[in-house]
Image (cartoon, rainbow, N blue to C red):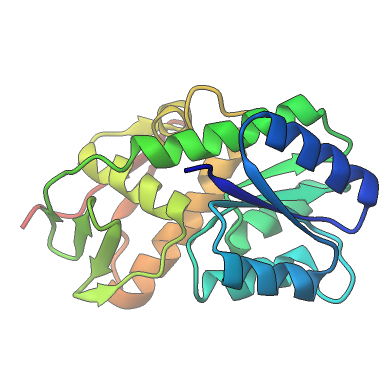
Length: 228
């Protein structure tokens, strides 16, 4: 079955080029031109990935992402015409999985989409339940709990937690985590790791009151929750 990609952008030229290149790469492509239309199509069509513009009429990409994360773990690639790092970080913090700055090469867009969906395919293999004092991870169901309470994680946050837990008490550098979570063909900077660790740590601490992801200053991060 063809993976479905939803492109949400109010610029016809970008929609048309993205649609043409993605369809040529073998994807089924749906398009929306406004924020409300994009949100409705995302919920009704349940695409495999959404290419989402940051600036949209009616509802911006940040709000759409936040609303989707209340109901869906669909992968989101955010498009932005802004080069300001704060905008990119804000997009990642509300739940986007990756970003691409306009103007961009259509071939790079296709490569990003392929890389994200490849991560999804590579992480569907069965694996046994992982239990720690505060955190429990079910790789097959792609669910994690903290003190028995289900953690509301984005796909990338879950992948990051799984990578850290599988290397329990071992310091993983940002480069290690990028390769394990985003893949060797990731296009962004290692700043994305810091953003996602911060989000993941906050969600776990909110329930357990414990910091189970420690920072190794200047090196990376390690998962320190005690195996149960």
